[in-house]
Image 1 (cartoon, rainbow, N blue to C red):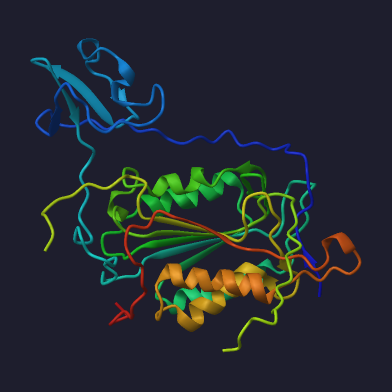
Image 2: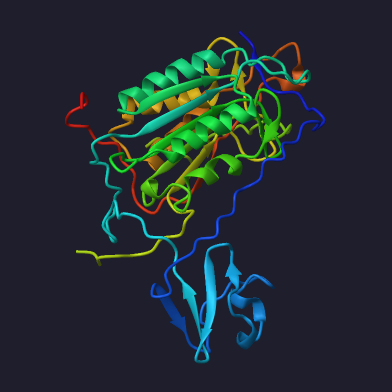
Length: 345
């Protein structure tokens, strides 16, 4: 068995896919009013509300494609964002995971590419099957897609985002592929992850507003290596009731778990699969309904960091290297997978 990772390549394929920006129009009666003193403002030049303009000239301005200002009798009003159904009480400590269904899980598994510089990802099918089983055991409705071109990947994502998730607890998306320096690879071109998760923001997918949106990314994020450091004991070491409505940011409730930190390789065993997916599957199977999600991912990091080391004796520079996963969390509550009382409905 050998461990493989993507080699450094020149970026030759760049996708032109960009984020969609929606302008949301609202009834004039659904507005809030601001006095002359604006209060909280962003710490960026030109990015604040009205950006330092004279309010008398700021009528009908759109801010970030969402808020719109109007001048009425010397006051500025801003239209509020769209309304979505409240899935969890305002001050609840945990997400409501008692909907009828757990929700969808999409796995995009990439083994072969049309890009000549990218080698086949041996071992990824092992990852895919094990992750599929683990997610099914947590009551997800799992769909797998193999070697998608970017247009097909977007098509599957758009279809998932357009469905009604009212009766679902959450959604999960796993992407197993090559990657480098902020980009992931589809079968034919590169793309950025934000072009995918954007489809599930509260504006784009209101039936998932206030619900967890989980992303698991197995891919390199650069070409740097982590040789690790040896820890050794010294002689001194011992042995021994909420409101009826509330608003949330449209980008809240996302969790993105990466197999490695920015700039570094992510390792994959050609027989047993990637270190990260092996560890994630092990934790989901053992403790998926015992611990909350952040605790589970902490133990995933421990498994990868302590339990794995590259074995490439034919390439000394790649041999005995380490890896640490990386987590970006916009979760606003504790996420814990409970038992579903009736899986057949």
